[in-house]
Amino acid sequence: MAYNPVGWFEIYVQDIPRAKEFYEAVLAIEMTPLEMPGVEMFGFPMHDDVKGSSGSIIKMPDMASGGSGTLVYFTCVDCAEESGRVEAAGGTVIQPKMSIGDYGFVSLIKDPDGNMVGLHSRQ
Image 1 (cartoon, rainbow, N blue to C red):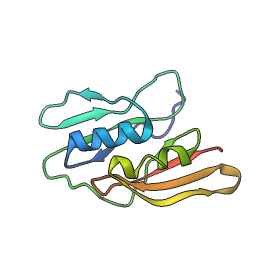
Image 2 (cartoon, one colour; image 1 turned 30 degrees about the vertical axis):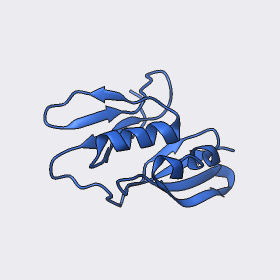
Image 3 (cartoon, rainbow, N blue to C red; image 1 turned 45 degrees about the vertical axis):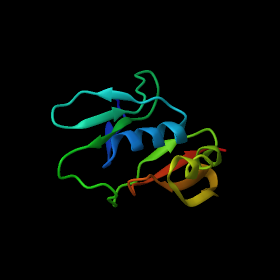
Image 4 (cartoon, rainbow, N blue to C red; image 1 turned 120 degrees about the vertical axis):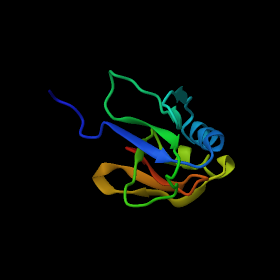
């Protein structure tokens, strides 16, 4: 069976309503509640017929937000557009749009819980 090696990701947060509002505003998406006992979760859009992985924001007891070591990149048409919405949504732009040569462009941002995520676009 052929599949993408990344099947799911979770971004740990402390304030679910604030995190949901942030990611919906920056990425111009609608997140949906995911039912799991003992945790609060909202999922990023999931489409079986397109490439890539999906995941969620999650508030779980004893799991801190703002961790480091793994960086999730969200695909964008033009990452300057999404990073332009970050500060109004309560986050911080760490690295404005920059070229990564033949691979396109990236921007690095932090959400209100201190999680750094990347934005990637081909233009």
